[in-house]
Image 1 (tube, one colour):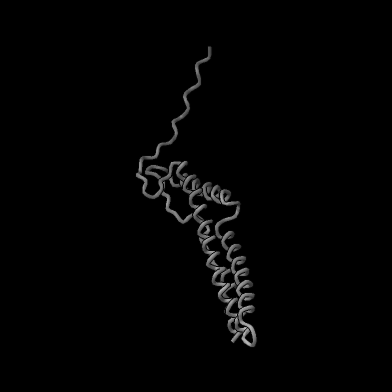
Image 2 (image 1 turned 90 degrees about the horizontal axis):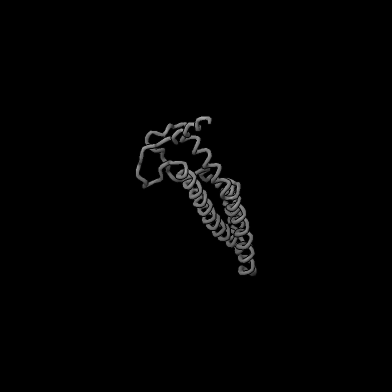
Length: 158
């Protein structure tokens, strides 16, 4: 039975390493009426890059995957150690396996909390950038897009 439980724990760690997290914003931003779509796409790309830099230069997916793997590995190791220490006698292997499974679950839970925080920081930076470029955030009323007026002509030569 301990081999089976250990296999489950190892499988959980491997699945955590393969988890796919959205690689980009999880919020809807819309162009204002009249804004050309190619300008909106350029704003989107610029703001995705800005948000990536704002969370430390990695995208949300990379940061969350790294956190998931490290949290699950630490949780598994600590859980196995506690299970081994509390199992005692002939059930020590089973206690370690059960502790490893429980530790993996706790580690993955912490990784999810970390992923959510990283995604939230990314979304905030993305929304700030898109808003500053004149785009509409959820709940914002639509006003017509106005291109910047042309600069005034130079003064006449004297």
